[in-house]
Amino acid sequence: MNKEELEIPFPKDRGFRYRLFEILPGAISWTVLILPFVLSVISPFLTVFFILGYLLLWLTKSVGLDIRAVQGFKTIKLQKKLPWLDMLDDVETGTLNTLGMPKWHANNLKRIAETPVPIKPKNVIQALVLATYNESRAVVEPTIKTILDSKYDMKRVILVIAYEERGGPDKEQQVKDLIKQYGNNFMYAVGVKHPKDIPGEIIGKGGNITFAGRVLAKYIQDKKIDPLNVLVTTLDADNRPHKNYLAGLNYVYSVCHDPVNTSFQPVPMFTNNIWDAPAPMRVIATGNSFWMVVSSMRPHALRNFSAHAQSLQTLIDTDFWSVRSIVEDGHQFWRTYFRYEGNHQVFPIYLPIYQDAVLANGYRRTLKAQFIQLRRWAWGASDVAYVAEMGFFRKNNVKKSSLIFKFLQLLEGHISWATAPLLLAFSAFIPAFFNPQNYSANLLPIIVSRVQTIALAGIFVTLFFSLSTLPPRPQHYKRRRTFLMVIQWVYLPITTILYNALAGLYSQTRLMLGKYIDNFDVTEKAVVSDVGKEINSSS
Image 1 (cartoon, one colour):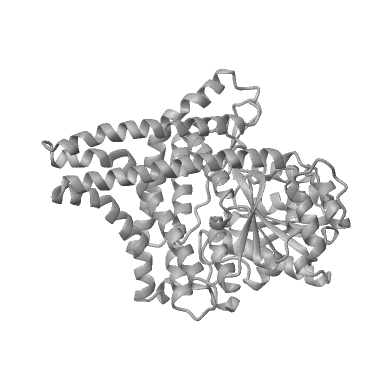
Image 2 (cartoon, helix red, strand yellow; image 1 turned 120 degrees about the vertical axis):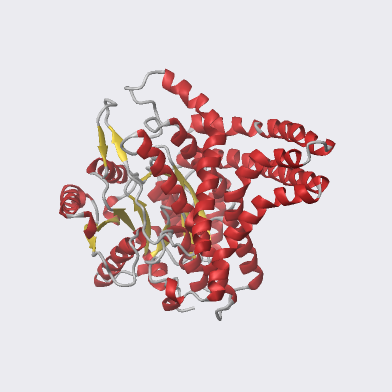
């Protein structure tokens, strides 16, 4: 499929069929939520059977998630300690010189010796596209410093700060100052201003990083560098890569037989400011980190999210990112998938990209900002219509079994996002409300309560995970703050329902009604100073 065909159609160009699939996620979600009420009127026994079956399904699923979380946490802990630069030397020479390494390292060397790969580690140039809009220097500068602290040769790294004209002259000067101060540490560093009001673009990150990506491609072309040797990672202003990320990414890229058709996904972990964020936001941030670790252990279902990497050649082939979607990260998977006729995979990088938990200037603004962030993520439901249109109604050579599986997986994920917390919390009480004399209906809440008590054992996995991934406690917080990190989990039922489920329903309902979210609402970012008092807002 040509790259010119990959863009999302304008709203005016979305016909009846496209609109049907936009309606589909919300229609199913609302049907699932209404179904227990309807079944309770028709047949209490059928309702009890449905709810118990759903609950047991989720109990089984939660056990699987906990197992994958433990596996993922152990894998990340191991890979953070590996001598990636030494392993890269092994790949370069084709000889195992680094002792005590995991078995898969030796297997990789054997595999590429038998079947040579197209990339040599020494030829890889890493480009970091750092997107910013209105974030303060207190947010952006630590990200650049973290990159410079990486265990990697910065003279093989290009820094592109992609900023918005609509951010104003102050933000433009901020970028120029940062380039002047830190640019000489890189192979090349440049600030790229994304003009406002480009026809055909919505206000969003996709247009910004696409504009910057094209400037990067022009630079690479002028230097006569093969774009296949350039590996591009997109970063938000608060994304701080682990010190081994660049080396680990180079390693995985250099042992990949099909780098053009592969995306690389590190593990986002929302811990930068976890000590500073309010308790509800800490719970949500930890839950998000937990889910990202679990997702990394399911490569067949892994999708681009936030910071992700692709070769520059891949980005050129897909015409970079979508300029019409506010979820350009996850949507990039589908653009690449259809561009290469289904021959595309996302490979996990078990090294973290540390990000901020939501923290705005003031408690109420923080609560609002969290919902805005989650509803933007939930707008990924808009990909359902895109995948259906591109996969089933456009000429392509995508294997239909793969397409159907991925389509159903996408649809189910968004429906569960919007419905599961509400069903698990409230559905057991519905049959008894409509049938107060029915024995099975009155017994259901008791059974469900006991099953949920068993399922709560999984909370201890999440608790252990959250405490293990905490950065050191800032000096301006006393030890009781650590205690609060434990008891904060009483907020979990509230945050899951009020934020996760309602954000999913909100986005799906707007999509149903054709009230498109066509403006990227940047999450406000505030920074608590070292003394714990002054807050610098991004706005």
